[in-house]
Length: 256
Image (cartoon, rainbow, N blue to C red; front, side, top):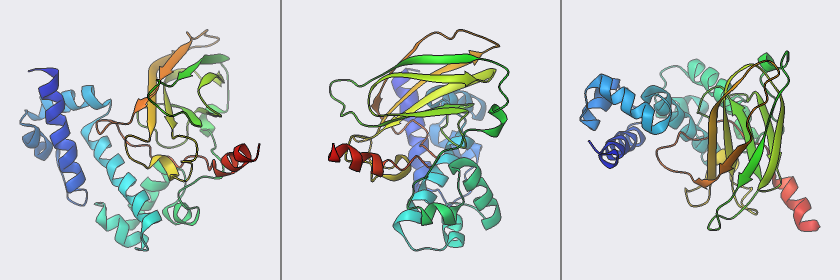
């Protein structure tokens, strides 16, 4: 089977996920939609998207919950039900662990985070690894502020181990990286689009990039990373964590 046919099958499944976010979709259901065996489907889906079908579906549900919290006045309980959770407690716990704040706080903040804390598990640094590199925008992409986060999985959720915000494309440096295997995930929207909270926006606006996996050992000298950003595609998991509120940076930039 060609790579185009495989991607087309995965697209069908993701479209079905979007349509049925509130339903109990099983791996068997998804495999039938893709017209693959269950085991072949799970492997193919991970190869194409970088994560499992279950994690991808969970990410889509939480992304929709983020939209509903900001764009509607529906209660947290109603939203949890709309995106497929039978328990509002389970939904709230999952939302906070992935987005970084509770659903009610996310709504209160308008979809932004006033600050981003790194994972407490990474604060006891016994290594001194540093990742340096460069963020590159193709000529057809409009530059903007760049959020960089180092995560244990290819899905940008929860607290990053290390993170930084650049004023635009260019060089970066992430210091004191703990031992482990990490993924560098980059997210950007053009200047003047800072009002789009937490990675929302259409694929022609949002630029993303990924580098890794990167394995850090004690006092490892990591190779430089060059990340060329591209439009966000339907095959990529959404950005779940609440991103830093950069609107003040934008106002300061205009005042200069």
